[in-house]
Length: 226
Length: 248
Image (tube, rainbow over all chains, first blue to last red):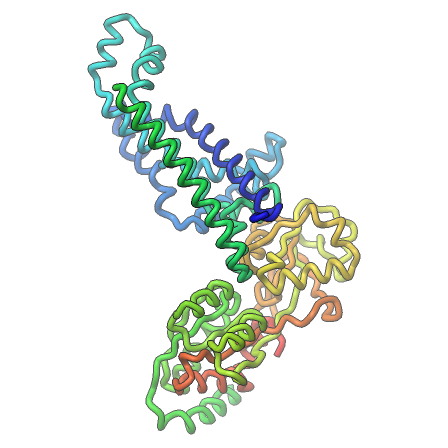
């Protein structure tokens, strides 16, 4: 066997994390991106800037502040304690929350530009045909923005898989709960177990390459329809 | 102070005739505090200049193996300098222990950690932070302590792992882990301990945490390298290192 059990466990956890984060961000990021694309409010500039902020801080520093915020003395920690879900650091859901925050721009920005390219005309046409706004969104905007949704999801998923500094800080490297593949590879490297590191990195790269290749192929097929 | 002055005099004599040189060195991140204090003292005394990179030793090892321009390594363990020596990347016989780390069980909560470490047996906490035992000597030492106390099995589900001793400290200092095995140097400065409660783990419960320094092959002919090795062994330097909670 090329990979040890703990390697496989880390890869499985990573896939689960990236899937959950992508799903959540599709739900949370879409309205935000839509609002950013359509709004003329003066508020749009500041919000757009805030969305991009996770890109600016070094991940481990961002992770440190998330650790403070989610900790027993932080505002998020206060909230989760009040809701009686306990503290989030060192748990899978803590990782999910941190990753949602960290990957937010990767979902919102491609969606925003996809929505912007849709333009006013299809929306006006739908309105004259009496479609509700929600109906318009799902029947007109979503099909027209399908490539944007693909790009945003791919970027979010890949970014979460490759995430390192944040998860290391929030996760505490617990096998099965927070030890994701990137951390596992890093552990191999730091422990000078280069052969294990190479194997795992190679398998991750090949796997990701194949998945991305398939998605991009599908995306360009899909793009030809419109 | 007198000692420092004597040391300065002592260092001036052999070094002054040589040209002042730049020395590129890699320093384990957990030694940042004392190193920043020692740097100006050394530079003033010798006229040499230190160009320091701080980081984890595993990274330094990979970098040095791949041609990083470091001339001296101040490590947080003894294994890595030994390994570099075996690889022919360090000058044989130049290695020595410049500091010995002390392991502490610490909590920001007053009264949680008792003076005997009984808190580990009671296990009334959710998370115990330790440094990754695979990567950091402090982590390996913490595991030894728990095994010797016979609590390792029962505590395993409560362990969270810092990438290094710094992150372990952060987990504990932010209260996310109620207690953690940290280095004395992180919670002690000039005789004053950080807030909270702590237990200084007795030396018979874990192997000595030796931190070694080694001259790298690239620095073989740099006069500043030899001067720094001498400087690290001087009484004044040792006193500063001790004031940060290390033994030597």
